[in-house]
Length: 271
Length: 271
Image (tube, rainbow over all chains, first blue to last red; front, side, top):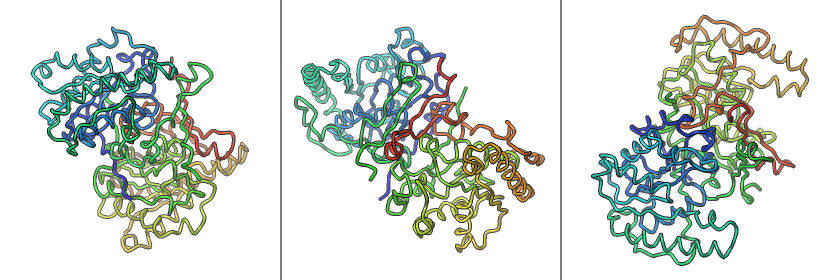
C-alpha cells in the first residue's frame, strides 16, 4: 500500500526559514532544549492551508519525528480541525522553535529576533494565501499571534481567530487528580466549542463539508484521530503517527534526563 | 549561520519509490527490523551524483536520522569519497531497506520483489545520469550490484566499479581483539587502496580535483570526516552528523532491545 509523505520545506521562503533560524544566542539553553535542534512545522506549506495553527513548543515525539504537534496534543488538534471539515488543508507552527526547559523568561519571549523570525513564518503562511481561520493553542501562542497582528502585514490582515486552551492543559493543570482532570477537560471543551462556533462559519472551503458537532464533556474516541501519514517524513513506521507515548526523556537526574530520548516500539507491533 | 539541508525525495521516480516499497511480506520480521520503517538513501537525488554507493543495511543512527550510512561506516565512506575528490556528488543506497536482525536467509535476499525494487533505485540513479564510479561495500552490496548488472539496463551499462570490504568489517570480524582489529584494518585499507586505483582515473569530474593519496595502515583523523550537514533533514542538531555513538539499542533481553532505540546527546554539548 502506498505511503503518502510530506515533501518538506523545499520551496521558498520555507527553505530559507529552515536553513537560517535563531539558535542558542536567542533561545538560551537554560530555558530551551536547543541541543535537539529546531522543529519547524507540520502540514501544508504549498499554499493550500485553510487553517493556520500556532502551538507552543515541541516535546520528545516531535523531536524524533521532526514535525510539530504529533503527540496527544496533536491528535486532539486533529479532531478539532476535523470538526471544521479540515482534514488536510492546515499548517501548524509553534510559538517556540525548541522545547521549553523549565520556564521561559519574559525577556526571552520578547526578544525581537525570536518574534521577527516567527513573524516571517506567519507572513509566509498567511499573506496572499487562502487561510480562512487561525487557531492559537495556549497563552504563549495567543501572545505570538498578537505580536504578529501588530506588524504592518498583520495589522491589515482580517481572519477569524480562536485563541483556545492548550490541548493538554487539563493534564498539566491537574497533576494526576482525576476529578480536576475531568473538570479541566470539560472546561477546555466548552472553550473549544466557543472557538468552533467562531471558526465554523468562516471556513468556507473545508476539505469535507461537515455539519458542526460540538464536543461533550470529554473527548470521544473519534475526536482524537491519528496524525495523518501524509504529514510525516518518508519511511516512518505507522506507530509513530498512529500512537503516542513511545518516546520519553529518561535519566537518573535532570541532567541525564535532558540528554536523553528513549524510544520504545509500542507493544503489539513486533511478533 | 545558515544550515544547508537535504531537500529529500521530492522528485520522481524517488518520490514514488519512497511511497511504495517492500514491507514485511518481503522483508520478513524474523530477519529484518521492519518495525522501524525503511531507510532509503543519503546524498544527491538530483542527477548530480558522480559516484553511486551501495551499502548494506541501516542501524540505529540511520533510523533516527532517516538517512543511510551516517554512523562510523558513513564517516569512513566519506573519507574514501574525498580521496576521489567527491565531497558532494554522491548518492548512497543500501542493499536492504531495513536493519538486518540476525541473518538474512538466502531465499529472502533472492526474493524477486526485493531485488526488483532495489534495481529501480539503481536504474533511477544510473541510467541517463552522470555517474563515473560505483562502490559496493561488503558482500551483500556486491551481490546487489551483480543482480542489477544482469538486468537489461545493467547489462549494457559501463562504469568503473569497486567492490570493497565493508567499512566496519574490521570491528565485526575482530570481536574486541586489538591485534585482529589492526590486521583487519590494514587488510581493508589495502583493499580500499586497490579500489581507489581503479576508481580514481574514472572520476573525471570530481567536486574538487585531488591528487590520489592512498591509505596507510589505519585511518588518519582526516580520513573519517563528518557527514555533511547538507545530507541531513532540516533542523537536526550538529552532533547528529558530526558525531557517532549517540544512539544504542538497549534492553534487558533481546526482545526489549529490539523494541528500543536510546538517544543520548554526547557529552560536551549541554552546558
